[in-house]
Amino acid sequence: MSHHLSATTAAASSSPSRRPSVTSFPSPLHQPSALFQQTNFVATRTEKRPAPSVAAAAASPVSPLLHRLAVVTGGNRGIGIEVCRQLALQGVTVILTARDDEKGKAAVESLCRESNLSNIIFHQLDILDAGSRASLARYIETRYGKLDILVNNAGVGGVAVDQEGLRALNIDPKMWLSGKAAHLIESVIVQTYDEAVKCLNTNYYGLKWATEALLPLLKKSTSGARIINTSSLRSELQRMPNEKLRESLRDADSWDEARIEAMLSEFLEDMKNGRLEVAGWPMMLPAYSMSKMVVNLYTRILARRHPEMRINCVHPGFVKTEINWNTGVLPPEEGARGAVMLALAPGDGPTGCYFDQTKMGEAW
Image 1 (cartoon, one colour):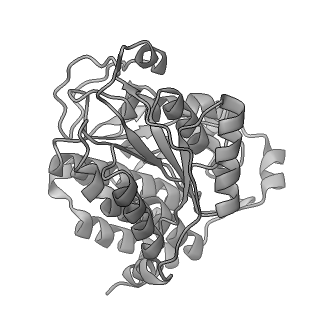
Image 2 (cartoon, one colour):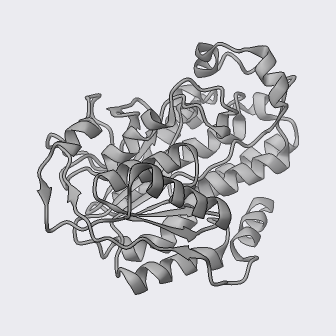
């Protein structure tokens, strides 16, 4: 067993099951349908095309037959809390999850007060804790019997940062987006092995484990399940220096979770030995970039296995949030639009695709 497997397995099973805190605001509301044009994407991207806006979805007629339930991970701040707000405003009952009880409850209370919402519920969730994941699944099974929407939003940056020093550099957003800031940030961002393990565990393994825990409930959806995985511009394969690996990653049919894990173990070994650049791994936020590349790959694998669901990944844009130390330029309200659009997608909407905000992207 690899060193990375040991770390992730321990994270999955270290904490005992416990009764979480739940803040409940029950209200059976309805879900409007989105206005996607008919598409036939299954685990692949065929062409770049615009997708409908949230405003268009909001203008659609409300069906009294569609009572939808959503879970949002990392829902207490940033993009996550905005996804919760926008889905609730569309009539979806939302379970906002967070690791921290107090922060999660405060987020729900804030949303209910500021947006006059009664259809948001808090439930504690640590995606790296097997007991916590099981507790959420039991709660949903007991109270609702199914799940319609899963937005995997929880994530970490994978580096240690001198935030004051980073702000002092005043890096142009275009430099961030292009990846050309890699050498500029060397003096203020430290890439350590431990932070890389934490990043991969949270951004990929935690997402995967949370999805697996909730898949049985998603399969029971009567309206067709939706899974939306938060990705990043850093996930796009054009940013992978290793040409052989880049071409291999484009072929999702040849990958499974075991092969992903083997690749990530190799990445960590090269990081430990100072061989990232020589081996052709991404050098701009390497662990974060790798975590999001495999999130995209896992999205395509899931879409292939579950053609009855709509499963996509979305880059929210360069949003000003804590994960990028507030260097972004877009407000969280805009960053949430893509995830909400895909959550409201109709049954003939795209699946296995990467979106750059609300438009089909070019990730592979």
